[in-house]
Image (cartoon, rainbow, N blue to C red; front, top):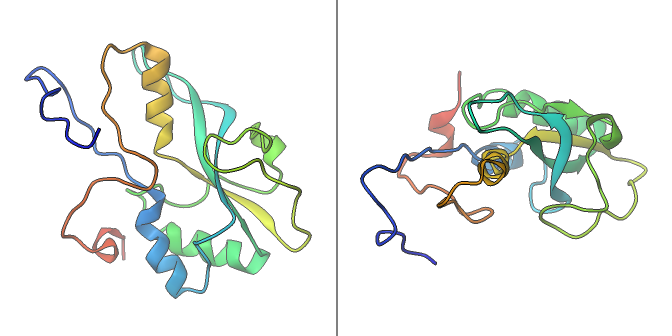
Length: 159
């Protein structure tokens, strides 16, 4: 469904959730590839409960070289309102990320010898919390399709 106007009611609440793709252009300019080696994974890290909303932290994982991981951390930290810096770099098991069962993307086949796993908080996290809350209605974005604005992503970073 692409048009939700018929579902909308006056008592609904909307949230604009930041996306990691916001800083992809800045990562690309800095030499960090964004077009491959990316997965969305559920972790065993709990989120902070807010009323009936709770659930596991969902992350976006990318395989990067150690040098790219440093650059990606420096660049993405300038976007604190759009996921910001990575929440973890290193062993996926340390945060309970199951590489065999990603939410989006094929199962992760082995660890590249020259790469390290880099994890950012993902906009799918509130989706998981809303599902766990048993809401009667939830309208959400499709992966990699989010809010459209005339603002450039570079306008969203902190100096």
